[in-house]
Image 1 (tube, helix red, strand yellow):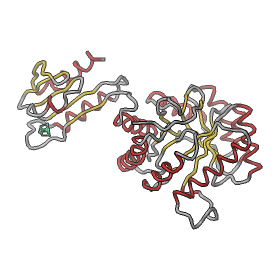
Image 2 (tube, rainbow, N blue to C red; image 1 turned 90 degrees about the vertical axis):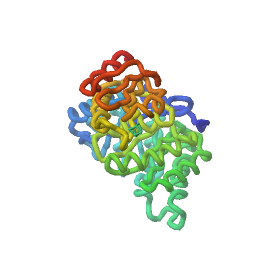
Image 3 (cartoon, rainbow, N blue to C red; image 1 turned 45 degrees about the vertical axis):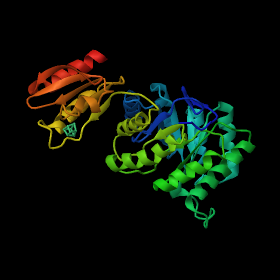
Image 4 (cartoon, helix red, strand yellow; image 1 turned 180 degrees about the horizontal axis):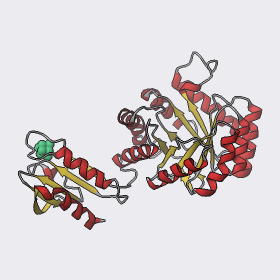
Length: 348
Ligand code: SF4
């Protein structure tokens, strides 16, 4: 997998682009004016592996909250700004680590220039965050959507470059997966800056994670993308978990356990689904990378999961515990979970 070359930049302590690992982002779902609730959620996000958090800044009060929030958290904060350039200036003063501007709703060049000058002085990166849903209707109305998104991002990029500013990151998000893929593929060769990938408003956890995995996964496999956010209608830690599953599936990041579990079939003589769910609940508490297999029968179990660190292949009333595909012992059915957990703990 050859990764697209991009100019690295730093958002707080995190490097985005270049050879840096693909960074995982999310967005707080609290009211930014509720300082304590927002701090609590950022801390939760940090614990579940999020590396950069975006906060909505819809008004002056939210902008004012940023400095207090910033003092109590260690994750880099990106302020999400729409419509009012003065909010961007306020959060820069408040010490934010990055800005996200929507070029679809801040169109005045003088206002954009004021933000860029202030960001340049503080060396704060700006994400040009194009969203399909907020393109101005009069912007290239006869051009296909993916091209319109790219043209808007490139136009904004060139304007920022003309102000001698290059701490730029770009995103081109749409709900439609093929449109999103096409837009990112098109811009990948046009600009040298890091790309933040996402499928916007992807939906509830299952459908949203699948949509995101297809869109983001295809791009990452093509070497496109430096940071990702999975937009799901649920707690943001679920977004982070889905992001790592995508990155782990492509071998791009390792964090936390990977569960290999068979789907079960008529050959299984135990409730594989129940056992796999119980093992998964236990694995949620672990942050080290470990591959664990739960297989419904001994016929295919160890062989199919031979690269798992530990696993169980269940049979009638008893199960074979294996490591790296080799059976190391058998346990009775009532001890399946406990035995597997004991083996997992030995590996950590
Ligand atoms: Fe069926 Fe065994 Fe395969 Fe599970 S591992 S799906 S029980 S054949």
